[in-house]
Image (cartoon, rainbow, N blue to C red; front, side):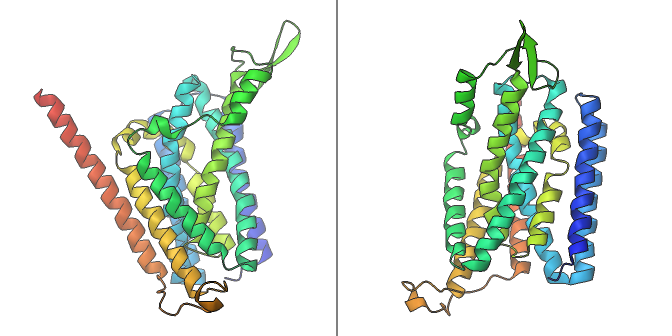
Length: 329
Protein backbone atom coordinates (compact mmCIF):
# COMPACT_ATOMS: atom_id res chain seq x y z
CA UNK A 1 0.00 0.00 0.00
CA UNK A 2 1.75 3.14 -1.27
CA UNK A 3 0.97 6.02 1.08
CA UNK A 4 2.52 9.36 0.19
CA UNK A 5 4.03 11.35 3.08
CA UNK A 6 1.49 14.15 2.59
CA UNK A 7 -1.35 11.66 3.20
CA UNK A 8 0.25 10.72 6.51
CA UNK A 9 0.63 14.39 7.40
CA UNK A 10 -2.98 15.25 6.53
CA UNK A 11 -4.28 12.21 8.43
CA UNK A 12 -2.31 13.01 11.57
CA UNK A 13 -3.22 16.72 11.41
CA UNK A 14 -6.95 16.09 10.91
CA UNK A 15 -7.22 13.44 13.64
CA UNK A 16 -5.19 15.61 16.01
CA UNK A 17 -7.48 18.56 15.27
CA UNK A 18 -10.56 16.46 16.08
CA UNK A 19 -9.06 15.36 19.40
CA UNK A 20 -7.87 18.90 20.17
CA UNK A 21 -11.36 20.23 19.51
CA UNK A 22 -12.74 17.67 21.93
CA UNK A 23 -10.14 18.66 24.53
CA UNK A 24 -10.97 22.37 24.19
CA UNK A 25 -14.74 21.86 24.33
CA UNK A 26 -14.63 19.54 27.33
CA UNK A 27 -11.95 21.58 29.05
CA UNK A 28 -14.04 24.75 28.87
CA UNK A 29 -17.16 23.12 30.27
CA UNK A 30 -16.67 19.89 32.27
CA UNK A 31 -20.07 18.19 32.46
CA UNK A 32 -21.93 14.93 32.11
CA UNK A 33 -23.00 14.84 28.44
CA UNK A 34 -26.64 14.24 27.54
CA UNK A 35 -27.77 11.14 25.66
CA UNK A 36 -28.58 13.28 22.62
CA UNK A 37 -25.13 14.86 22.66
CA UNK A 38 -23.45 11.45 22.91
CA UNK A 39 -25.58 9.85 20.20
CA UNK A 40 -24.95 12.73 17.78
CA UNK A 41 -21.17 12.65 18.28
CA UNK A 42 -21.00 8.85 18.13
CA UNK A 43 -22.99 8.75 14.88
CA UNK A 44 -20.58 11.32 13.43
CA UNK A 45 -17.47 9.32 14.37
CA UNK A 46 -18.87 5.97 13.21
CA UNK A 47 -20.05 7.55 9.96
CA UNK A 48 -16.59 9.07 9.42
CA UNK A 49 -14.96 5.65 9.93
CA UNK A 50 -17.31 4.01 7.41
CA UNK A 51 -16.69 6.76 4.84
CA UNK A 52 -12.94 6.44 5.40
CA UNK A 53 -13.13 2.68 4.83
CA UNK A 54 -15.12 3.23 1.63
CA UNK A 55 -12.49 5.75 0.47
CA UNK A 56 -9.69 3.23 1.07
CA UNK A 57 -11.68 0.59 -0.84
CA UNK A 58 -12.23 2.97 -3.75
CA UNK A 59 -8.65 4.24 -3.93
CA UNK A 60 -6.56 1.20 -2.92
CA UNK A 61 -8.84 -1.76 -3.61
CA UNK A 62 -11.28 -4.09 -1.88
CA UNK A 63 -8.58 -6.05 -0.06
CA UNK A 64 -7.21 -2.98 1.75
CA UNK A 65 -10.73 -1.77 2.45
CA UNK A 66 -11.57 -5.12 4.05
CA UNK A 67 -8.37 -4.91 6.11
CA UNK A 68 -9.44 -1.51 7.45
CA UNK A 69 -12.97 -2.61 8.35
CA UNK A 70 -11.71 -5.83 9.96
CA UNK A 71 -9.12 -3.89 11.96
CA UNK A 72 -11.54 -1.14 12.93
CA UNK A 73 -14.23 -3.57 14.08
CA UNK A 74 -11.70 -5.55 16.10
CA UNK A 75 -10.19 -2.48 17.76
CA UNK A 76 -13.64 -1.01 18.39
CA UNK A 77 -14.81 -4.24 20.02
CA UNK A 78 -11.75 -4.32 22.26
CA UNK A 79 -12.38 -0.67 23.14
CA UNK A 80 -15.96 -1.48 24.16
CA UNK A 81 -14.65 -4.24 26.43
CA UNK A 82 -12.18 -1.74 27.86
CA UNK A 83 -15.12 0.43 28.91
CA UNK A 84 -15.96 -2.21 31.52
CA UNK A 85 -12.61 -1.50 33.15
CA UNK A 86 -13.10 2.27 32.81
CA UNK A 87 -16.44 1.98 34.63
CA UNK A 88 -14.80 -0.02 37.43
CA UNK A 89 -11.97 2.53 37.73
CA UNK A 90 -14.37 5.46 37.90
CA UNK A 91 -16.47 3.69 40.53
CA UNK A 92 -13.53 2.63 42.70
CA UNK A 93 -11.96 6.09 42.60
CA UNK A 94 -15.31 7.85 43.21
CA UNK A 95 -14.90 10.19 40.25
CA UNK A 96 -17.76 12.76 40.11
CA UNK A 97 -19.89 12.32 36.98
CA UNK A 98 -19.16 15.85 35.74
CA UNK A 99 -15.41 15.13 35.72
CA UNK A 100 -15.54 11.67 34.17
CA UNK A 101 -15.56 12.71 30.52
CA UNK A 102 -12.49 14.93 31.06
CA UNK A 103 -10.64 11.99 32.61
CA UNK A 104 -11.76 9.72 29.78
CA UNK A 105 -10.67 12.21 27.14
CA UNK A 106 -7.18 12.51 28.61
CA UNK A 107 -7.04 8.73 28.87
CA UNK A 108 -7.99 8.41 25.19
CA UNK A 109 -5.30 10.88 24.13
CA UNK A 110 -2.74 8.91 26.15
CA UNK A 111 -3.98 5.68 24.57
CA UNK A 112 -3.52 7.14 21.09
CA UNK A 113 0.05 8.20 21.87
CA UNK A 114 0.91 4.79 23.33
CA UNK A 115 -0.64 2.92 20.43
CA UNK A 116 1.26 5.12 18.00
CA UNK A 117 4.51 4.08 19.67
CA UNK A 118 3.52 0.39 19.70
CA UNK A 119 2.50 0.57 16.02
CA UNK A 120 5.91 1.97 15.05
CA UNK A 121 7.75 -0.62 17.14
CA UNK A 122 5.53 -3.47 15.93
CA UNK A 123 5.91 -2.52 12.26
CA UNK A 124 9.69 -2.32 12.61
CA UNK A 125 9.85 -5.67 14.41
CA UNK A 126 7.68 -7.41 11.78
CA UNK A 127 9.77 -5.94 8.99
CA UNK A 128 13.01 -7.17 10.58
CA UNK A 129 11.90 -10.48 12.14
CA UNK A 130 9.19 -12.64 10.59
CA UNK A 131 9.11 -14.84 13.70
CA UNK A 132 7.49 -11.98 15.63
CA UNK A 133 4.16 -13.35 14.35
CA UNK A 134 4.74 -16.43 16.54
CA UNK A 135 5.05 -14.20 19.61
CA UNK A 136 1.99 -12.12 18.67
CA UNK A 137 -0.09 -15.21 17.98
CA UNK A 138 0.84 -17.00 21.21
CA UNK A 139 0.27 -13.81 23.22
CA UNK A 140 -3.23 -13.36 21.75
CA UNK A 141 -4.16 -16.98 22.48
CA UNK A 142 -2.89 -16.51 26.05
CA UNK A 143 -4.94 -13.31 26.36
CA UNK A 144 -8.02 -15.12 25.06
CA UNK A 145 -7.66 -17.78 27.75
CA UNK A 146 -7.29 -15.07 30.43
CA UNK A 147 -10.48 -13.38 29.21
CA UNK A 148 -12.44 -16.61 29.54
CA UNK A 149 -11.10 -17.25 33.04
CA UNK A 150 -11.96 -13.70 34.18
CA UNK A 151 -15.41 -13.72 32.57
CA UNK A 152 -17.35 -14.49 35.75
CA UNK A 153 -16.04 -11.51 37.71
CA UNK A 154 -15.23 -8.28 35.89
CA UNK A 155 -14.19 -6.62 39.15
CA UNK A 156 -11.51 -9.23 39.66
CA UNK A 157 -10.31 -8.65 36.09
CA UNK A 158 -9.10 -5.20 37.11
CA UNK A 159 -6.21 -4.87 39.51
CA UNK A 160 -4.81 -1.52 40.56
CA UNK A 161 -1.41 -0.93 38.94
CA UNK A 162 1.39 -1.15 41.50
CA UNK A 163 2.73 2.26 40.52
CA UNK A 164 -0.67 3.79 41.38
CA UNK A 165 -0.60 2.17 44.80
CA UNK A 166 2.95 3.46 45.26
CA UNK A 167 1.93 6.99 44.24
CA UNK A 168 -1.03 6.91 46.62
CA UNK A 169 1.25 6.05 49.54
CA UNK A 170 4.32 8.18 48.82
CA UNK A 171 3.16 11.29 46.94
CA UNK A 172 1.49 14.36 48.53
CA UNK A 173 -2.13 13.62 47.69
CA UNK A 174 -5.27 15.38 48.83
CA UNK A 175 -8.75 13.87 48.93
CA UNK A 176 -10.31 17.16 47.80
CA UNK A 177 -11.13 17.65 44.11
CA UNK A 178 -10.04 20.89 42.45
CA UNK A 179 -12.27 20.64 39.40
CA UNK A 180 -10.34 18.74 36.74
CA UNK A 181 -6.98 20.16 37.82
CA UNK A 182 -4.18 17.80 38.80
CA UNK A 183 -2.90 19.92 41.67
CA UNK A 184 -4.22 22.21 44.39
CA UNK A 185 -2.74 24.24 47.22
CA UNK A 186 -3.48 23.36 50.83
CA UNK A 187 -1.89 25.20 53.71
CA UNK A 188 0.63 26.77 51.37
CA UNK A 189 1.73 23.35 50.08
CA UNK A 190 1.23 22.07 46.54
CA UNK A 191 -0.77 18.81 46.58
CA UNK A 192 -1.82 16.33 43.91
CA UNK A 193 -5.58 15.94 43.51
CA UNK A 194 -7.57 12.70 43.01
CA UNK A 195 -7.70 13.58 39.30
CA UNK A 196 -3.95 12.91 39.13
CA UNK A 197 -4.53 9.36 40.40
CA UNK A 198 -7.37 8.88 37.90
CA UNK A 199 -5.25 10.00 34.94
CA UNK A 200 -2.31 7.89 36.09
CA UNK A 201 -4.55 4.83 36.43
CA UNK A 202 -6.18 5.32 33.04
CA UNK A 203 -2.82 5.91 31.37
CA UNK A 204 -1.31 2.70 32.75
CA UNK A 205 -4.48 0.79 31.90
CA UNK A 206 -4.30 2.12 28.34
CA UNK A 207 -0.75 0.80 28.16
CA UNK A 208 -1.98 -2.70 29.01
CA UNK A 209 -4.81 -2.39 26.48
CA UNK A 210 -2.31 -1.49 23.76
CA UNK A 211 -0.44 -4.73 24.44
CA UNK A 212 -3.59 -6.62 23.39
CA UNK A 213 -4.92 -4.44 20.60
CA UNK A 214 -1.78 -3.86 18.52
CA UNK A 215 -0.87 -7.56 18.03
CA UNK A 216 -4.54 -8.23 17.23
CA UNK A 217 -4.70 -5.75 14.37
CA UNK A 218 -1.29 -6.75 13.02
CA UNK A 219 -2.87 -10.18 12.65
CA UNK A 220 -5.28 -8.63 10.14
CA UNK A 221 -3.04 -6.20 8.25
CA UNK A 222 0.64 -5.36 7.95
CA UNK A 223 -0.03 -1.85 6.68
CA UNK A 224 1.01 0.73 9.33
CA UNK A 225 -1.36 3.32 7.84
CA UNK A 226 -4.36 1.02 8.23
CA UNK A 227 -3.24 -0.03 11.71
CA UNK A 228 -2.95 3.61 12.78
CA UNK A 229 -6.21 4.86 11.26
CA UNK A 230 -8.21 1.86 12.50
CA UNK A 231 -6.98 2.57 16.04
CA UNK A 232 -7.71 6.29 15.75
CA UNK A 233 -11.29 5.73 14.57
CA UNK A 234 -11.80 3.07 17.25
CA UNK A 235 -10.80 5.55 19.97
CA UNK A 236 -12.88 8.40 18.56
CA UNK A 237 -16.28 8.42 20.20
CA UNK A 238 -15.17 6.13 23.03
CA UNK A 239 -15.86 8.92 25.53
CA UNK A 240 -19.41 9.38 24.26
CA UNK A 241 -19.93 5.63 24.11
CA UNK A 242 -19.02 5.39 27.80
CA UNK A 243 -21.98 7.57 28.77
CA UNK A 244 -24.36 6.37 26.06
CA UNK A 245 -24.29 2.62 26.67
CA UNK A 246 -23.18 2.34 30.28
CA UNK A 247 -26.26 0.24 31.09
CA UNK A 248 -26.04 -1.73 27.85
CA UNK A 249 -22.47 -2.75 28.68
CA UNK A 250 -23.78 -4.57 31.75
CA UNK A 251 -26.19 -6.48 29.50
CA UNK A 252 -23.44 -7.73 27.15
CA UNK A 253 -22.67 -10.60 29.51
CA UNK A 254 -20.94 -12.69 26.85
CA UNK A 255 -18.74 -9.92 25.48
CA UNK A 256 -15.58 -11.22 27.14
CA UNK A 257 -16.22 -14.71 25.79
CA UNK A 258 -16.88 -13.34 22.31
CA UNK A 259 -13.69 -11.30 22.38
CA UNK A 260 -11.74 -14.30 23.64
CA UNK A 261 -12.94 -16.27 20.60
CA UNK A 262 -12.04 -13.32 18.37
CA UNK A 263 -8.54 -12.98 19.83
CA UNK A 264 -7.98 -16.73 19.69
CA UNK A 265 -9.03 -16.73 16.01
CA UNK A 266 -6.57 -13.93 15.18
CA UNK A 267 -3.89 -15.63 17.29
CA UNK A 268 -4.25 -18.89 15.36
CA UNK A 269 -4.24 -16.88 12.10
CA UNK A 270 -0.94 -15.27 13.12
CA UNK A 271 0.64 -18.61 13.99
CA UNK A 272 -0.46 -20.07 10.64
CA UNK A 273 0.98 -17.05 8.85
CA UNK A 274 4.22 -17.44 10.81
CA UNK A 275 4.39 -21.11 9.77
CA UNK A 276 3.72 -20.17 6.17
CA UNK A 277 6.67 -17.73 6.19
CA UNK A 278 8.76 -19.66 8.72
CA UNK A 279 12.48 -18.93 8.95
CA UNK A 280 13.23 -20.41 12.38
CA UNK A 281 15.82 -23.20 12.02
CA UNK A 282 14.26 -25.45 14.68
CA UNK A 283 10.88 -25.51 12.90
CA UNK A 284 10.79 -27.57 9.70
CA UNK A 285 14.54 -27.00 9.26
CA UNK A 286 14.04 -23.28 8.71
CA UNK A 287 11.85 -23.90 5.66
CA UNK A 288 8.37 -22.59 5.05
CA UNK A 289 5.60 -24.95 6.19
CA UNK A 290 3.71 -25.59 2.98
CA UNK A 291 0.62 -27.15 4.54
CA UNK A 292 -0.07 -24.09 6.74
CA UNK A 293 -3.18 -22.48 5.21
CA UNK A 294 -3.53 -18.75 4.69
CA UNK A 295 -6.71 -17.14 5.99
CA UNK A 296 -7.86 -14.51 3.45
CA UNK A 297 -8.91 -11.12 4.76
CA UNK A 298 -12.52 -11.60 3.58
CA UNK A 299 -12.76 -14.74 5.72
CA UNK A 300 -11.37 -12.81 8.69
CA UNK A 301 -13.91 -10.02 8.17
CA UNK A 302 -16.78 -12.52 7.96
CA UNK A 303 -15.53 -14.30 11.10
CA UNK A 304 -15.22 -11.02 13.03
CA UNK A 305 -18.72 -9.84 12.09
CA UNK A 306 -20.14 -13.27 12.83
CA UNK A 307 -18.49 -13.57 16.24
CA UNK A 308 -19.57 -10.09 17.32
CA UNK A 309 -23.14 -10.60 16.05
CA UNK A 310 -23.57 -13.94 17.84
CA UNK A 311 -22.03 -12.49 21.02
CA UNK A 312 -24.40 -9.51 21.04
CA UNK A 313 -27.55 -11.51 20.23
CA UNK A 314 -26.73 -14.20 22.79
CA UNK A 315 -26.04 -11.58 25.47
CA UNK A 316 -29.28 -9.70 24.85
CA UNK A 317 -31.25 -12.98 24.75
CA UNK A 318 -29.84 -14.01 28.13
CA UNK A 319 -30.59 -10.56 29.54
CA UNK A 320 -34.24 -10.85 28.44
CA UNK A 321 -34.45 -14.37 29.88
CA UNK A 322 -33.04 -13.22 33.23
CA UNK A 323 -35.52 -10.31 33.38
CA UNK A 324 -38.45 -12.63 32.70
CA UNK A 325 -37.23 -14.98 35.42
CA UNK A 326 -37.11 -12.08 37.90
CA UNK A 327 -40.60 -10.92 36.90
CA UNK A 328 -42.04 -14.38 37.57
CA UNK A 329 -40.68 -14.41 41.12
